[in-house]
Amino acid sequence: MDFDESPAEIAFRAEARAWLETHAPAFATGDGPVSVYITDPEDERRHLAACRAWQAHKYDHGWAGITWPTQYGGRGGTPTEDAIFRNEETRFLSAWGVFAVGIGMAGPTIMAHGTDDQKQRFLQPMLRGDEVWCQLFSEPNAGSDLGGLSTSAVRDGDEWVVNGQKVWNSGAHYSDWGILLTRTNLDAPKNRGITYFLVDMRTPGIETRPLRQITGAAHFNEVFLTDVRIPHAHVLGDVDGGWGPMMTTLANERNLIGSASRSPFPGSVDLARRMGLAGDPTTRQRLAQSFIRHEILKYLGYRVKTAATKGIAPGPESSVLKLYVSQHLSAEADMLMAMLGPHATLWAGDAPDDGSWQMDFLGQWNPKIGGGTDQIQRNTIGDKVLGLPPEPRV
Image (cartoon, rainbow, N blue to C red):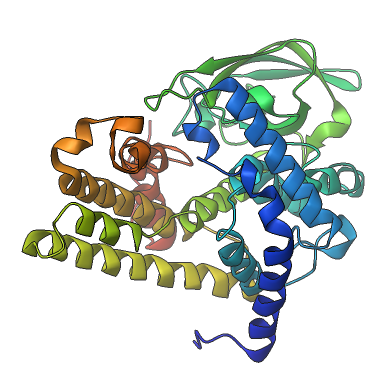
């Protein structure tokens, strides 16, 4: 594999950089902590509005959805061009998280399994940021094993009546639409009686309750659905056939989590210098190990991009990247806390860098659970990638 950018990709980077340097600074005031760390509701509203404005501006100028087909408002570009644009964009602001479920997960799933009417209705507003999406999969008793979900949907003419509870729903309190899994056939095997819906979050009967996190923010939610009526036209794929679209969503989610990881360099190197640890042998060894892990992540990312360039949809091998990210971030968090020493116990304004490293420490648990736990990723790798005998199931 040739990791050097082609002349066309070099030209694309220059074009993207020039456009961003002209347009992004006007929107950079809306940047700040990722939404999972925002603790003040008013700050969250401002962040959401700024993210929507930037996404709409990109869309209107042909820079949203680099790999999306042009008929849905995308640019029709390559996965490499998408990676180049995101790399350049992060120099200015990071609004991607608000749209991760929609553009990163629901969009590809609708493209793969949706009807023409669904594609025409949902994809362009999603890509422009006019409609924000959330994921309604996990339940109190069905998280790692979605085959055990119990939220029900019963057909009533041209509608389905949904009752149940979902949990750990990122951004559900400000989302316009959700991707929803329900059980529609109690007699079918647990993986085959599930139907995938697209649900308007303003539908009567939907109640969203925020959940306070360890960071102090309330980005996650539990969602209660009571006699919620969904048009049959909003079934994605086949009735009782939601497992296939669900796997498409989860594979894209794992790729997203992996591609969202970041290196501590140069920030952690600068922190080591400021803490007087630049010459400490133990700290230098930890920084070297961190650099090695980041290089491994980079090449795992190249593997994903190579598959995408060849038109190969994300599959079970995406669990390798997702698992390694969670291991990497835990090691990073431990290293940063060791470097901070007693300062690690401080918070916000009293701590170095306004407590951003403490937020990284608390946030390390998110990728260990979100998108499937580390244990689920190991099972997927063993079963689907390595072909090992599956673990016993009841």
